[in-house]
Image 1: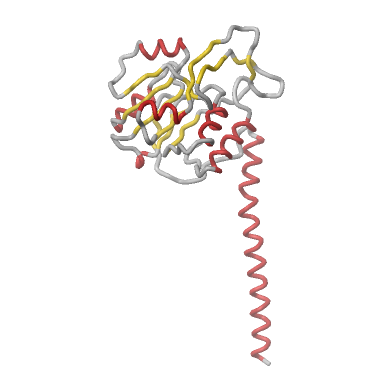
Image 2: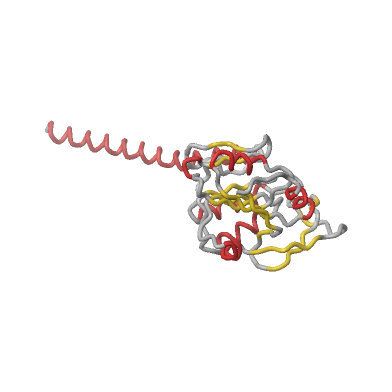
Length: 239
């Protein structure tokens, strides 16, 4: 009798343990959702840091980017799209690792600024932009829209820029692999991500600046970009 009683009690305990594990499993699944909801309510993307890696923040305040230093070498190749009028990140990256950078900036005003700087020989500047096709892209000033998305302001003159697909640029410059891809494209990150997902190019690190607000990325668009990158194997190490 004792043996049977002990068995039944053990089975009951196992059911309790299984129920507890089942509840804990669901809590583990729901906790990121709750945290994502809290982030959304704060006006931030649901996605947060997904992997813990050593990281190094470089660049000026407000325009800095983090890199994983363990993945950086002197032979590392960096592609940067969109520089603006601040090259502190690029200069610090070279100072730390001595790597080679190819900067792509099709906007005449920013391109003029870059070429007026005393840049080290590791930096190569190209008057080209990134797109999902090779050719010419029309780009105009951004204005706010009622749905929170940025749209082109048709009342102002637009500019035409030479753009290339990422594989086209890599073939042109003879680069089989990119170690760091930096995207700072003022709202064109969705197009750039689409062009990346549609190819077999997989940079080791991708650094993206999302500009939120009435003249930039909506939170929903930012989440779609991050989801696409998750689907092809990337995980967030800094945000």
